[in-house]
Length: 103
Image (cartoon, rainbow, N blue to C red):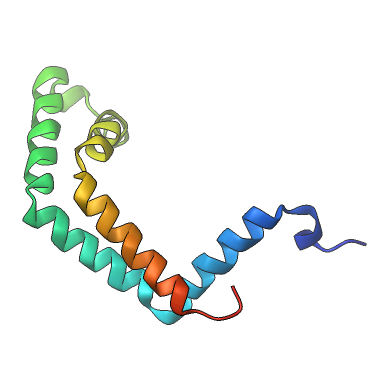
């Protein structure tokens, strides 16, 4: 029998290994906290709240499910993340991975 790793791609294996390192080291949680703080600082959270309120206003609270609200505002939320914040997070991830050995 072949192992499950033999059927996955090298890219998928590398992504899994990087994610594992981020989680095991606690770096993933630190990055999430940093991202959360930066999004609040730049007003992203407030912008997204306004977007959510607008969707609720348009569709009506009685007829709107949470899943539908999340589906409606997720693309807008992603688009509203400032490029500077994205670049900063990517740089932090790259720095972390550069410090790791055997990747």
